[in-house]
Image (cartoon, rainbow, N blue to C red; front, side, top):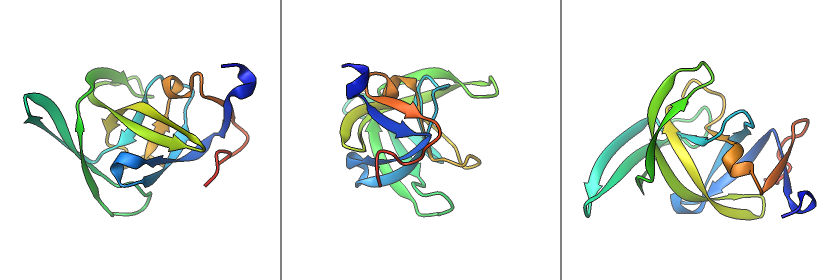
Length: 143
């Protein structure tokens, strides 16, 4: 894919999750983060058919206590460094996301972002080969 055929996103965008009831989440585009992450205020691991799964409680909207509960097959567990350099082991899930007109599978680490302004960070792995970032703009992929 050439640079000219990549989508352009601003520093914040909307993402829709088809497998989570088409929930929309406001995303901060973060080229400093390798992996994308999603806010989960509660995570419960469990076994299903001899596979590791997680039940996840989300607050998809900022400043709202509305809860969404969903289940995902565990894709991985990884050590992730936050912006302060603290390393934590996080569950990683894989799920489709729609940003603008691009639908693709995304790897997301799960972490509590209650104290953060955005419910999701879109990292370099998800951006690579799909989007260029215009850091002066917002919501270029549309509502």
